Image 1: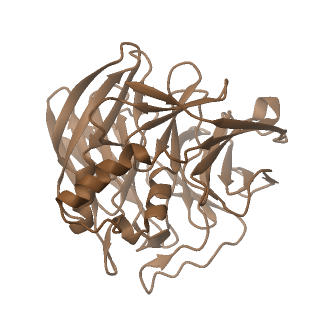
Image 2: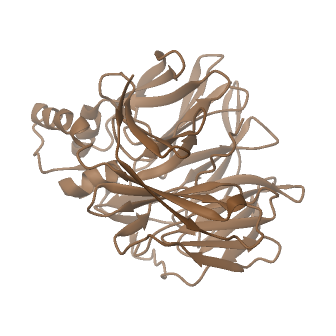
Length: 423
């Protein structure tokens, strides 16, 4: 495992939350055209926010030559990239921050969309580095899983050549390897290898470490049709595996009460250059995992359930709720027991989504959400703003702009909560 230091600049400003009981959280953004990103670290208990700007210009060179060689080998034009992007759009997409994973001490792993290095940022000391896990320059999964007790990082990888092959044929199987990296011993172990996909978006283990779930986001389309992506489920104890196909598999969250139940998001979106295309309503699937394989126990959808960037699972007044960011201007709250709608909380009016002529190309940024520590309120963080709503009141009563966002800034993924780890 090799590490390379990065340039980080820091800015602090006061930021009051008017009595809301939210944990510390991090909100990601990119600066379009700069190969730079800023992470806003909100500290409600200290009524402040720290913004850390990470300069990644030149970092793409860690991957560029592998991509060039793969294209030459497969006779792919050097100007051709996935999702019909230009070269500058591609590298900006690859290096965009998407999610946050707490590691040991105050170190956070920032999930990058498609890259062959990990980005680690220490939000206490304002230090950053790119990490090469030492597996032959393979591309790395975006959002991963950390075993706090063992100090082990679980992640998946695939060869750069696989992504080039999918430029030619988005349906082609790609050889994927799942790894367990000991950060304390600087040693790595292969867990699984087999045919899967290339845009590996999230890897997570069940609370009892019995099951591993890996989601391939995909985002490929052919004409006006979205190509379904896949979910890999491994029974780590019985050495069995299953694969499911769903529209734009992305994220999974485990139930806080029933440890063998997870909720999987089906985004139903594709990527066309820098535009996100909505092909239809999204779905949240409730899946029970046991030794006989995954079992569908319910699902939720809604005509306005679009581009479901984030879903969280939390307790509210004796219920388990699933909170989902529904593009462009709604937060959906779902009763996890029944998979029925509990409540919709609306933001200010966003663009009108029309999927009658599919796909609808999104014209505004998305946003992420977290719940308060007491489960009484929802917070939304987007491009340049933070809003909060008491759940039972059902409306946003707090909105505040965040200094530092410019015209080229864009919220890019999930709100991260570094103050605790989900067990």
